[in-house]
Length: 325
Image (cartoon, rainbow, N blue to C red; front, side):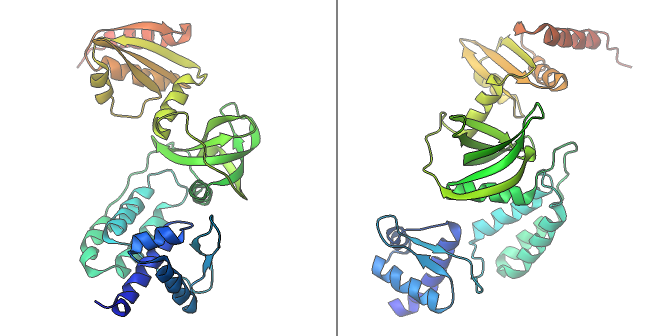
């Protein structure tokens, strides 16, 4: 196929790449498209001639980005991306995002209409699905979440008001790293220069989000990944209720049988393991300890505050007095 015949498809692929990331270097685009950097420059000029706002900078840090303008290209998704978007829309109603359920189903209906016919049966099946929201989950502002996600992606400093567990409000200015969703709660992992340390922020406690329009160089995380660091942070945090158990099972078996996210850790100890939980509410602590009891193995309570020990003892007394009818 001649280069001229390949051009329309290549321009569409170039648009798709520019939509997927904030900025690309000419070398990266050339490698993805299988052409020279000179060809990339020519294709960028062709897009500009079609009124697509592709901006570029020169120098070692230069690159191309798709800016805002009056004529934007259509959203380009491959098959896997379309299915992923549809699944995300179906599950959005139960994700703790304020007022998002109806909008998600409306967007899914539009997506079903405009995508290729081969994908419509799958998307139509998804549009009939329903997500059951979990009661009592704090609502998150979708605009705030989108802004935080954009700042994470662009390595852009962001400021916001934050209310901590003690209901103390403060203005924070941080380097956002990653958003995580755990047990229907959204968290932001960020480095706080004022405190010279990494911090997790509950997104439902964040308000008045304001990008600082200032880029930063990402720092190395103090853990292998954000999820494991979140677990470690929960365990080390000064929560009111704590307990440490020695369970007569291997650590991998205990971890495999705890089917929910636990604010604690499981540490191997030979054929046994040590399980630590740290939480803010006594009801959650009892649920976590009950999950260990349900494994059917012997265990000992190695450490617990007087209040925590009393909670566990009282729960055990009530279970012993249970009489089935």
